[in-house]
Image (cartoon, rainbow, N blue to C red; front, side, top):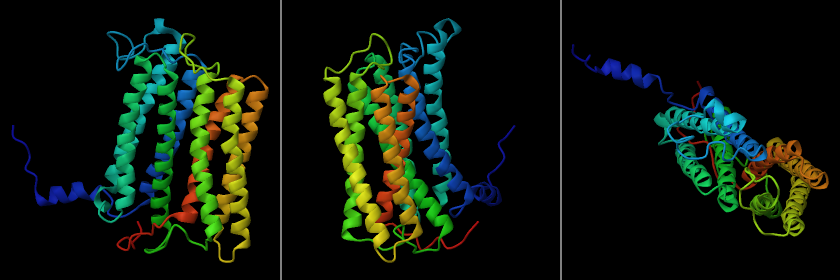
Length: 325
Protein backbone atom coordinates (compact mmCIF):
# COMPACT_ATOMS: atom_id res chain seq x y z
CA UNK A 1 0.00 0.00 0.00
CA UNK A 2 1.46 3.38 -1.00
CA UNK A 3 0.96 6.81 0.45
CA UNK A 4 -1.27 9.16 -1.49
CA UNK A 5 0.72 11.85 -3.28
CA UNK A 6 0.50 15.40 -1.96
CA UNK A 7 -0.74 17.43 -4.89
CA UNK A 8 -0.90 21.23 -5.05
CA UNK A 9 -4.67 20.99 -4.65
CA UNK A 10 -4.31 18.86 -1.52
CA UNK A 11 -1.78 21.26 -0.04
CA UNK A 12 -4.06 24.16 -0.87
CA UNK A 13 -6.99 22.52 0.92
CA UNK A 14 -4.85 21.89 4.00
CA UNK A 15 -3.63 25.48 4.00
CA UNK A 16 -7.19 26.75 3.67
CA UNK A 17 -7.98 25.37 7.12
CA UNK A 18 -5.81 28.06 8.69
CA UNK A 19 -7.18 31.61 8.52
CA UNK A 20 -5.38 34.23 6.45
CA UNK A 21 -6.54 37.08 8.69
CA UNK A 22 -7.63 37.72 12.25
CA UNK A 23 -11.00 35.99 12.63
CA UNK A 24 -13.61 35.45 15.29
CA UNK A 25 -11.93 32.12 16.03
CA UNK A 26 -8.64 33.90 16.71
CA UNK A 27 -10.33 36.12 19.27
CA UNK A 28 -12.09 33.15 20.89
CA UNK A 29 -8.76 31.36 21.27
CA UNK A 30 -7.20 34.48 22.79
CA UNK A 31 -10.07 34.69 25.29
CA UNK A 32 -9.63 31.00 26.11
CA UNK A 33 -5.91 31.54 26.58
CA UNK A 34 -6.46 34.37 29.06
CA UNK A 35 -9.19 32.58 31.00
CA UNK A 36 -7.13 29.40 31.25
CA UNK A 37 -4.07 31.32 32.46
CA UNK A 38 -6.19 32.95 35.15
CA UNK A 39 -7.90 29.67 35.97
CA UNK A 40 -4.74 27.69 36.59
CA UNK A 41 -3.69 30.28 39.17
CA UNK A 42 -6.93 29.61 41.04
CA UNK A 43 -6.62 25.83 40.78
CA UNK A 44 -3.00 26.09 41.88
CA UNK A 45 -4.24 28.04 44.87
CA UNK A 46 -6.75 25.29 45.59
CA UNK A 47 -3.85 22.83 45.71
CA UNK A 48 -2.10 24.98 48.29
CA UNK A 49 -5.20 25.81 50.34
CA UNK A 50 -6.27 22.17 50.62
CA UNK A 51 -2.74 21.04 51.59
CA UNK A 52 -2.58 19.00 48.37
CA UNK A 53 0.79 20.32 47.20
CA UNK A 54 2.39 16.92 47.62
CA UNK A 55 -0.73 14.98 46.65
CA UNK A 56 1.48 13.72 43.84
CA UNK A 57 4.76 13.27 45.73
CA UNK A 58 7.02 13.20 42.68
CA UNK A 59 7.33 14.69 39.18
CA UNK A 60 6.81 14.17 36.26
CA UNK A 61 5.17 10.97 37.52
CA UNK A 62 2.38 11.44 40.05
CA UNK A 63 3.81 8.60 42.10
CA UNK A 64 6.57 6.07 41.39
CA UNK A 65 5.37 3.84 38.56
CA UNK A 66 2.21 5.85 37.79
CA UNK A 67 1.76 8.97 35.70
CA UNK A 68 -1.69 9.54 37.22
CA UNK A 69 -3.00 9.53 40.75
CA UNK A 70 -4.52 6.37 42.20
CA UNK A 71 -7.58 6.04 44.46
CA UNK A 72 -5.52 5.15 47.51
CA UNK A 73 -3.79 8.53 47.26
CA UNK A 74 -7.04 10.16 48.38
CA UNK A 75 -8.54 13.55 47.60
CA UNK A 76 -5.17 15.33 47.68
CA UNK A 77 -3.94 13.18 44.81
CA UNK A 78 -7.00 14.03 42.73
CA UNK A 79 -6.62 17.76 43.40
CA UNK A 80 -2.91 17.89 42.57
CA UNK A 81 -3.21 15.68 39.48
CA UNK A 82 -6.18 17.72 38.28
CA UNK A 83 -4.12 20.87 38.49
CA UNK A 84 -1.29 19.22 36.56
CA UNK A 85 -3.74 18.14 33.87
CA UNK A 86 -4.71 21.75 33.25
CA UNK A 87 -1.18 22.39 31.98
CA UNK A 88 -2.05 20.14 29.04
CA UNK A 89 -5.19 22.18 28.38
CA UNK A 90 -3.17 25.40 28.38
CA UNK A 91 -0.66 23.84 25.99
CA UNK A 92 -3.36 22.77 23.52
CA UNK A 93 -4.94 26.24 23.55
CA UNK A 94 -1.54 27.84 23.05
CA UNK A 95 -0.68 25.56 20.13
CA UNK A 96 -4.04 26.27 18.49
CA UNK A 97 -3.42 29.99 18.95
CA UNK A 98 -0.08 29.68 17.16
CA UNK A 99 -1.70 27.73 14.32
CA UNK A 100 -4.48 30.30 13.95
CA UNK A 101 -1.87 33.06 13.67
CA UNK A 102 0.53 31.10 11.48
CA UNK A 103 -0.52 32.49 8.09
CA UNK A 104 -0.56 36.07 9.42
CA UNK A 105 2.60 35.79 11.50
CA UNK A 106 4.56 38.13 9.22
CA UNK A 107 1.83 40.77 9.44
CA UNK A 108 0.73 40.37 13.05
CA UNK A 109 4.24 39.89 14.36
CA UNK A 110 3.51 41.12 17.86
CA UNK A 111 0.50 38.84 18.35
CA UNK A 112 2.46 35.88 17.01
CA UNK A 113 5.41 36.68 19.27
CA UNK A 114 3.10 36.82 22.29
CA UNK A 115 1.57 33.46 21.36
CA UNK A 116 5.04 31.92 21.17
CA UNK A 117 6.02 33.47 24.49
CA UNK A 118 2.92 31.97 26.09
CA UNK A 119 3.78 28.49 24.85
CA UNK A 120 7.36 28.85 26.08
CA UNK A 121 6.09 30.18 29.40
CA UNK A 122 3.79 27.20 29.86
CA UNK A 123 6.75 24.86 29.33
CA UNK A 124 8.86 26.80 31.84
CA UNK A 125 6.00 26.75 34.34
CA UNK A 126 5.70 22.98 34.01
CA UNK A 127 9.37 22.63 34.92
CA UNK A 128 9.08 25.06 37.83
CA UNK A 129 5.97 23.23 39.01
CA UNK A 130 8.00 20.04 39.00
CA UNK A 131 10.75 21.81 40.96
CA UNK A 132 8.27 22.88 43.64
CA UNK A 133 7.36 19.23 44.20
CA UNK A 134 10.97 18.04 44.08
CA UNK A 135 11.95 20.73 46.60
CA UNK A 136 9.02 19.95 48.93
CA UNK A 137 7.13 23.18 48.22
CA UNK A 138 9.97 25.57 48.99
CA UNK A 139 8.12 28.92 49.38
CA UNK A 140 10.72 30.74 47.27
CA UNK A 141 10.07 28.46 44.29
CA UNK A 142 6.32 28.62 44.85
CA UNK A 143 6.58 32.43 44.81
CA UNK A 144 8.49 32.42 41.52
CA UNK A 145 5.87 30.04 40.11
CA UNK A 146 3.11 32.52 40.93
CA UNK A 147 4.92 35.60 39.62
CA UNK A 148 5.59 33.88 36.28
CA UNK A 149 1.89 32.99 36.13
CA UNK A 150 1.12 36.70 36.51
CA UNK A 151 3.52 37.46 33.64
CA UNK A 152 1.71 34.92 31.46
CA UNK A 153 -1.58 36.62 32.32
CA UNK A 154 -0.10 39.95 31.20
CA UNK A 155 1.03 38.43 27.89
CA UNK A 156 -2.35 36.75 27.36
CA UNK A 157 -4.08 40.08 28.06
CA UNK A 158 -1.88 41.86 25.54
CA UNK A 159 -2.51 39.12 22.99
CA UNK A 160 -6.28 39.40 23.40
CA UNK A 161 -6.09 43.17 23.12
CA UNK A 162 -4.08 42.91 19.89
CA UNK A 163 -6.25 40.37 18.08
CA UNK A 164 -9.57 41.84 19.22
CA UNK A 165 -8.42 45.29 18.13
CA UNK A 166 -7.44 43.92 14.72
CA UNK A 167 -10.80 42.17 14.43
CA UNK A 168 -12.86 45.24 15.31
CA UNK A 169 -10.95 48.12 13.74
CA UNK A 170 -9.46 49.05 10.36
CA UNK A 171 -5.75 49.02 9.62
CA UNK A 172 -3.75 51.74 11.29
CA UNK A 173 -6.05 52.09 14.31
CA UNK A 174 -3.95 52.49 17.48
CA UNK A 175 -4.61 50.72 20.77
CA UNK A 176 -4.29 54.16 22.36
CA UNK A 177 -7.44 55.38 20.64
CA UNK A 178 -7.87 58.62 22.57
CA UNK A 179 -5.96 61.54 23.99
CA UNK A 180 -3.35 61.01 26.70
CA UNK A 181 -1.27 63.34 28.83
CA UNK A 182 2.06 63.04 30.56
CA UNK A 183 0.20 62.64 33.85
CA UNK A 184 -2.16 59.92 32.58
CA UNK A 185 0.68 57.93 31.03
CA UNK A 186 2.79 58.24 34.18
CA UNK A 187 -0.12 57.23 36.42
CA UNK A 188 -0.89 54.14 34.33
CA UNK A 189 2.78 53.15 34.35
CA UNK A 190 3.16 53.67 38.11
CA UNK A 191 0.04 51.59 38.66
CA UNK A 192 1.44 48.77 36.52
CA UNK A 193 4.84 48.83 38.25
CA UNK A 194 3.23 48.91 41.69
CA UNK A 195 1.22 45.85 40.68
CA UNK A 196 4.44 43.82 40.48
CA UNK A 197 5.63 44.96 43.89
CA UNK A 198 2.20 44.00 45.23
CA UNK A 199 2.36 40.54 43.66
CA UNK A 200 5.92 39.80 44.81
CA UNK A 201 5.26 40.95 48.37
CA UNK A 202 2.02 38.97 48.28
CA UNK A 203 4.02 35.80 47.65
CA UNK A 204 6.13 36.58 50.73
CA UNK A 205 2.98 37.03 52.82
CA UNK A 206 1.68 33.71 51.50
CA UNK A 207 5.00 31.99 52.14
CA UNK A 208 4.90 33.21 55.72
CA UNK A 209 1.26 32.30 56.39
CA UNK A 210 -0.43 29.02 57.30
CA UNK A 211 -1.51 27.83 53.84
CA UNK A 212 1.71 26.18 52.70
CA UNK A 213 0.35 23.37 50.53
CA UNK A 214 1.56 20.66 52.91
CA UNK A 215 1.86 20.52 56.73
CA UNK A 216 5.58 19.73 56.47
CA UNK A 217 6.47 22.44 53.94
CA UNK A 218 9.03 25.08 54.89
CA UNK A 219 7.91 28.66 55.49
CA UNK A 220 9.53 32.07 55.26
CA UNK A 221 10.84 33.39 58.56
CA UNK A 222 9.32 36.86 58.22
CA UNK A 223 7.22 38.52 60.88
CA UNK A 224 3.70 37.96 59.54
CA UNK A 225 2.34 41.37 60.55
CA UNK A 226 5.37 43.26 59.26
CA UNK A 227 5.41 41.58 55.84
CA UNK A 228 1.64 42.08 55.52
CA UNK A 229 2.06 45.80 56.18
CA UNK A 230 4.82 45.95 53.57
CA UNK A 231 2.48 44.23 51.10
CA UNK A 232 -0.14 46.93 51.67
CA UNK A 233 2.18 49.82 50.70
CA UNK A 234 2.19 49.20 46.91
CA UNK A 235 -1.55 48.53 47.08
CA UNK A 236 -2.08 52.10 48.28
CA UNK A 237 0.26 53.30 45.52
CA UNK A 238 -1.96 51.49 43.01
CA UNK A 239 -5.10 53.09 44.44
CA UNK A 240 -3.60 56.59 44.33
CA UNK A 241 -2.15 56.12 40.84
CA UNK A 242 -5.46 54.82 39.50
CA UNK A 243 -7.37 57.72 41.06
CA UNK A 244 -4.94 60.15 39.42
CA UNK A 245 -5.43 58.31 36.12
CA UNK A 246 -9.20 58.46 36.51
CA UNK A 247 -9.17 62.22 37.08
CA UNK A 248 -6.77 62.76 34.18
CA UNK A 249 -8.82 60.65 31.78
CA UNK A 250 -12.09 62.39 32.66
CA UNK A 251 -10.65 65.90 32.57
CA UNK A 252 -8.71 65.53 29.33
CA UNK A 253 -10.67 66.36 26.14
CA UNK A 254 -10.59 63.68 23.47
CA UNK A 255 -10.17 60.58 25.62
CA UNK A 256 -11.94 57.48 24.33
CA UNK A 257 -14.73 55.44 25.93
CA UNK A 258 -12.32 52.49 26.07
CA UNK A 259 -9.81 54.52 28.06
CA UNK A 260 -12.48 55.61 30.52
CA UNK A 261 -13.91 52.09 30.89
CA UNK A 262 -10.54 50.45 31.47
CA UNK A 263 -9.58 53.06 34.06
CA UNK A 264 -12.81 52.46 35.98
CA UNK A 265 -12.24 48.71 35.69
CA UNK A 266 -8.73 49.10 37.12
CA UNK A 267 -9.95 51.20 40.04
CA UNK A 268 -12.82 48.83 40.83
CA UNK A 269 -10.52 45.81 40.68
CA UNK A 270 -7.85 47.19 43.00
CA UNK A 271 -10.32 48.60 45.53
CA UNK A 272 -12.26 45.32 45.65
CA UNK A 273 -9.03 43.33 45.88
CA UNK A 274 -7.83 45.53 48.73
CA UNK A 275 -11.13 45.05 50.56
CA UNK A 276 -10.85 41.27 50.19
CA UNK A 277 -7.28 41.46 51.45
CA UNK A 278 -8.33 43.24 54.62
CA UNK A 279 -11.22 40.80 55.00
CA UNK A 280 -8.95 37.77 54.93
CA UNK A 281 -6.44 39.42 57.27
CA UNK A 282 -9.03 40.41 59.86
CA UNK A 283 -10.82 37.04 59.80
CA UNK A 284 -7.78 34.80 60.22
CA UNK A 285 -7.20 33.79 56.57
CA UNK A 286 -10.20 31.51 55.94
CA UNK A 287 -9.66 29.30 52.91
CA UNK A 288 -12.62 30.61 50.90
CA UNK A 289 -11.62 34.25 51.29
CA UNK A 290 -7.98 33.50 50.48
CA UNK A 291 -9.12 31.74 47.29
CA UNK A 292 -11.24 34.78 46.41
CA UNK A 293 -8.23 37.04 46.98
CA UNK A 294 -6.16 34.86 44.66
CA UNK A 295 -8.79 35.08 41.93
CA UNK A 296 -8.93 38.82 42.50
CA UNK A 297 -5.19 39.03 41.92
CA UNK A 298 -5.64 37.64 38.41
CA UNK A 299 -8.42 40.13 37.64
CA UNK A 300 -6.39 43.03 39.03
CA UNK A 301 -3.45 41.98 36.85
CA UNK A 302 -5.66 42.04 33.75
CA UNK A 303 -7.19 45.40 34.72
CA UNK A 304 -3.85 47.11 35.41
CA UNK A 305 -2.41 45.76 32.17
CA UNK A 306 -5.29 46.97 30.00
CA UNK A 307 -5.33 50.43 31.62
CA UNK A 308 -1.57 50.71 31.06
CA UNK A 309 -1.83 49.58 27.43
CA UNK A 310 -4.63 52.05 26.68
CA UNK A 311 -2.34 54.88 27.76
CA UNK A 312 1.12 53.85 26.59
CA UNK A 313 1.01 51.21 23.83
CA UNK A 314 2.39 52.18 20.42
CA UNK A 315 0.68 49.23 18.71
CA UNK A 316 -1.51 49.78 15.65
CA UNK A 317 -3.54 47.35 13.57
CA UNK A 318 -1.11 46.24 10.82
CA UNK A 319 -1.80 47.76 7.42
CA UNK A 320 -2.10 44.40 5.62
CA UNK A 321 -5.11 43.32 7.69
CA UNK A 322 -8.01 45.21 6.15
CA UNK A 323 -10.36 42.30 5.42
CA UNK A 324 -12.82 40.65 7.78
CA UNK A 325 -13.90 37.01 8.03
